[in-house]
Amino acid sequence: MGVRIERPGSSAACVVHIDGDMDMSVVPAIRSAVDAAVDLGCTCVVLDLSGVTYADSSALGLIVWMDRRLQPLDGRLVLAGADRNVNRVLELSGLVGLAPSVVMASDTEQALGTLELVPERSGPSWEERLVVAAEVASMSGVRRRVCDLVAPLGLTEGAVFDLKVAVGEALANAVRHGSPGGSGDAVQVTVSAYDDRVVVTVQDAGGGFDGDPLSGDDVYASGGRGVMFMRALMDRVEFSRCDDGGTVVRLTKRLAAGSDRVVTGA
Image 1: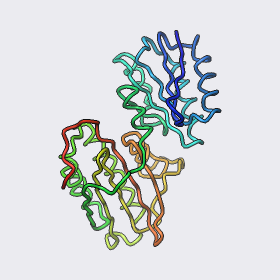
Image 2: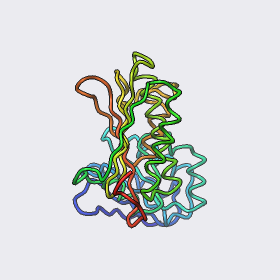
Image 3: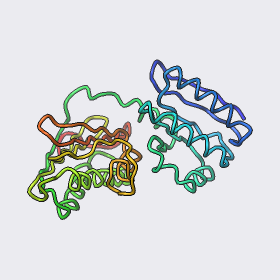
């Protein structure tokens, strides 16, 4: 088993390359190396699993520990390049989607691209705003419209579905928690297309939710599965308060480099 840590440039991201079996004989060394890297400012960790041929429960324990280590730092753990067998172990564990900071990527290049998403350098190529009544009956139509708008951008079918689910969860929160006036309130959804990403914002009219990890069994609660889905499916999820009340959720999905996309208009 070989372990090597790489830190590209001066970013807060680092890549942990692992080769061979990932079991209890090597997990302590990996943990020690990651702990040292985090102490030096590496708050976003890419675990390169492309060279891992075996993973057991101790490897899953390492992932749980990394999630707990990074959460207070608002960090992120990306599991990149796992083969079919290792990926099956990860799926059986249920960690991805439940651990707040853990997401998956096909390879380290995609993972780093996600973590190093830079601020927009200019305004969007196009933008469309939807305003609907804060009621459950409006949600399906908004989800469909968002998918129609992003269709020309070159996202894969899976990426479009990811966006649809994330937007749906944000809408559900806006309707349930951010609309004290019920259907008399409005929810505003804005789709903005940039050269390298699409951004969807969902704004409610009330107290809303802020993404804080609160415990609870409510699927739409701040610490429930809805927010976890958003964080797992999007490249970036941001929560902010409006000056005049309400909450804005900003969902960002990166566009693949060189994809056949149209960004000149909706």
